[in-house]
Length: 64
Image (tube, rainbow, N blue to C red; front, side):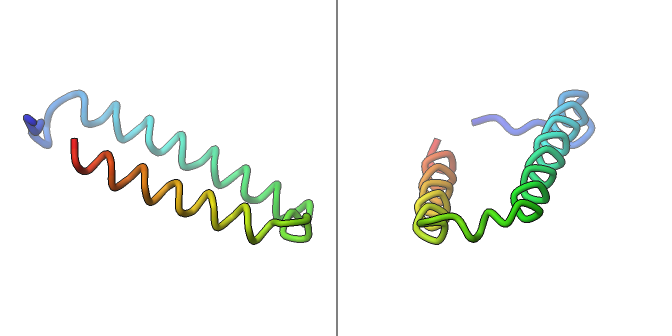
């Protein structure tokens, strides 16, 4: 897999896209906390499942 140089124009675009996704997810988190999502039935279970799923996805991406 070829790495792009840090000054490649695509790097800036990628950083902007990742930052936009991060900001959206932080907004979703704030909304969930504001609505007491942690009180929902099975919240801990679902959070654990999502966390494991994310770790698996990251591990798979690193192998590509």
